[in-house]
Image (spheres, rainbow, N blue to C red):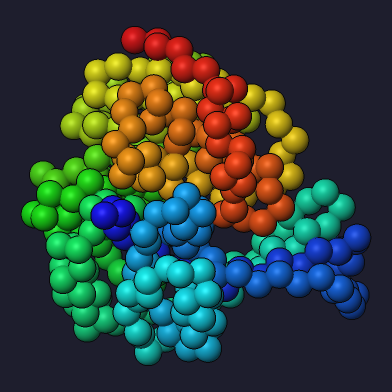
Length: 313
């Protein structure tokens, strides 16, 4: 039986990508190529998991015509739609690609009502017995308290489910306050620095940050460093993961792909450095593709062979 992975995206969007030769301010810009996708960090995770042949369900909040568009995309991709309907309208997020740059226009999204949050938690509790792992990604929508992820993690803990969390700021702080902890978190270097309240200017600084008392009960901490690879803390050991140099076509979504890689690897019972190389490989492979949240599974073995893991501590 294929393990079922549940992804949580509480603030999804329809991602609209406009590609222009030049972006003209205070003038008409005509777009020939438009790409619209079901967006949000957790839905990027869902797509990559599906490409890795995982059995995937997705949940969060959806409303309005854009919410219906996302539901139709999930159906096309074979992802179970377990989203909760809301009275508000799901947002657009617009990316304008021009002259080697990317300008983003991000809507803040709907305000979630108390009864909609209660419905989500009720439905989530009913889904948990069916799933093996849970990934939680991205920001919280308006109206949702900062400790909401902590509530989700506590429910997962009650059902003894492995939780992978990718968020930052207040949500990350609040998510680590309770007795129930996520099994894996995936901050980047800047997010880790903000979390511990110290600048990180060297590998020594990073290792000191990983020694922060608040982080000691977390089994896996994956610190993504972009083109420099990653530093990974697994229990008491710390590793440097070195990645191959590739032609990065579109690095957006690589962090989400790493989270998907670790979720898939754990569901396949991969362990230790094999799991690290598998998880990080998905971030590299995503950067090599034009579309966000996509990988070429044919390149996984090649990429894993190119990745080196060095134990630091």
